[in-house]
Image (cartoon, rainbow, N blue to C red; front, side, top):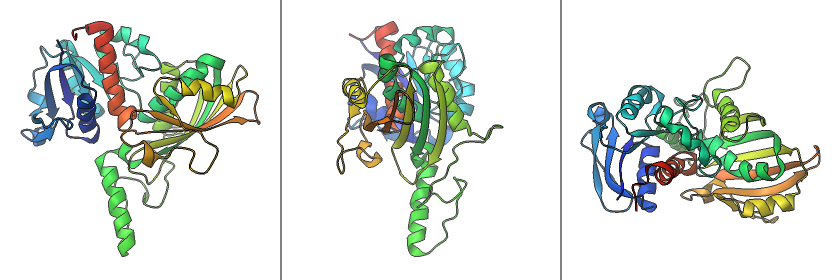
Length: 342
């Protein structure tokens, strides 16, 4: 016996990836509904590579009664309207937006890191999916934190344009093409030209000079991993279509060597260690696209602090950073609480 699952925002980048992953992982389904706004009503979209077509329904008119869970990829404004409605009808919402992440009554889950936190989902019948850059980082940090207790994290991100949705990907493509033919590369989605450039600005600026994206990495890491860990982040948009990268510097309370860290990471859930100290002995965003893993490379000791390590972390942001993590939460919810599937 399987589950009745809703995918809301099914026509967007993340929603389509959710459908791909549900199909790939053979998630136990009795029924599936795909929702979007009124303008997409009646459209047909693929259910992964199963050959099955799903007809898009209007989320405004959809009745969530009798459905087990809904994976939302519709943004904060629409989530504010629909998540309470679905939750009240008994359909557990797994939300990709930032709306509920810091709500104390809503678990913020990365299944490899804090699966036990899902037990609090009944307070609002909503579970939050973290920010894409946070998700891959805490997968890397968790096994190291368990081994040597992290004090402080300094992270610089190199975030792909798909993190800004289809409009971000389109802008990179169009600007690149325009530059090659001598046309203007005028920014519309981003604040400056993204083609052949990097932009140290993601989301809005806060009073202290940080951006909201950087703030998310700080507070979400504390909520998921440990409130005592100090985090500082610089988040940068780079001209890559898919795949977020992070240069992470970690200070520990206890001694840990690079060799010990490599051994721990090699066995850690969700992590793939690719760390050869030679040309090409590391993973780049192009190589991680379509993969489930969070890839770790360049593990080395930092001699400028006691018990310091630096490493390179890469993951497909549409997968582990969003869709995959949401499906893993659905699997965890089923195993731990709903238990309908055989």
